[in-house]
Image 1 (tube, rainbow, N blue to C red):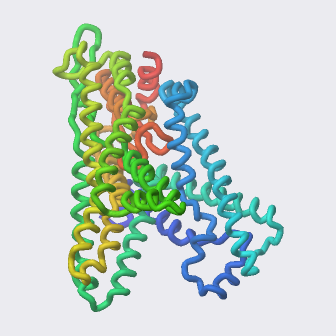
Image 2 (image 1 turned 60 degrees about the vertical axis):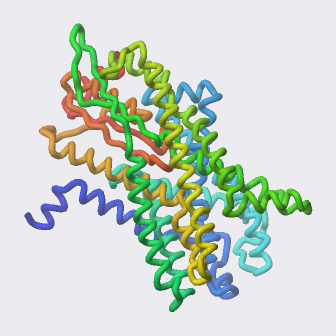
Length: 483
């Protein structure tokens, strides 16, 4: 087979090329400056020094969008219309995506106002402003930050639609990897010829690889609970299963717990109070007080966040709706089984997240007692092994792996013309619908777009698409919507 035929016949290869192309574009455009500043003047004053990243229209990154996802997800617990939007139908999910986008733009503009005000004070002294009027400068700069977010979301959508993987986490991971490589490169150049540059960097690389493999293994752990379907007076066995994972809560409990420890006391530490300052010191350094506090908060927030996103009642209603039952579990005990499984998964997830959070602190504590040559690399190693960054990388790896598996399943089947039938709110709903269609004799495949350790389920980022044969699309949608 010629290279041309291989490229055009291998759909996955084309998708990988598109994804890599978008990543390259993203890495090149990330320093596009604001239209309100004179970057040439700034470079003449400070010699560049990477300041361009702070006056780029992409300074905010995807965080306004991620913040909007979190706000709407938590708000959905307390606001009935939002809750109905989550669970009502596929149309409700599309409204949720639009609402998330609008809220993200508003958040980006508000954050842009704060950054623009600070920029104006600094750049005014340097005479690096292209717009001298303060109000106009702040408004135009804030709109530029919002426009930068729109461009990033557009690039992410290109990957999600025509590439491989979920666009937003793919681009985030490309930045994380670049930052890790840059940190190690700077440490290596600054410690050239020392014990640190010769040996510790090798330990960092090996440790990072081992942790990625370990985190991937733990994240992929699941208990497969197989589902049977009733059709008239007979029970139909399928290969459909409900995955019980320890990753329902994602990494949000970890981020919230760390913030709950650091932020309040970091602020109070500036007060002239020795008692408060001593507490802040204990809770903001690598010691047993910090690690113990981290354990308690991670476990609490993991159980709280799991309760928000894992809904046994919703799963039970979905099973009843499609006349499905768990294999080997009495129907009367299904509800208790789901609740018990949720608690077990939350406990396991909490322990794992605590290990991830405590590892950098434990690393620093260990290296601090070593000879000074090794101690040189303690901060770099702790930053490289930071659980948040590695979990994001793991989430993307697993998402891409599952998508490739779905593509292979489609290509190896007898069906050559697949069509999108339904977009589910989570993996459980998607698998139940897939099994229900298979019980009706309709081949179906679930293609996941998820970010397991980044944003949890039921946000505008995650989605699970159910594909069927194009000729069966209308019949399948009729089965799913009119049952």
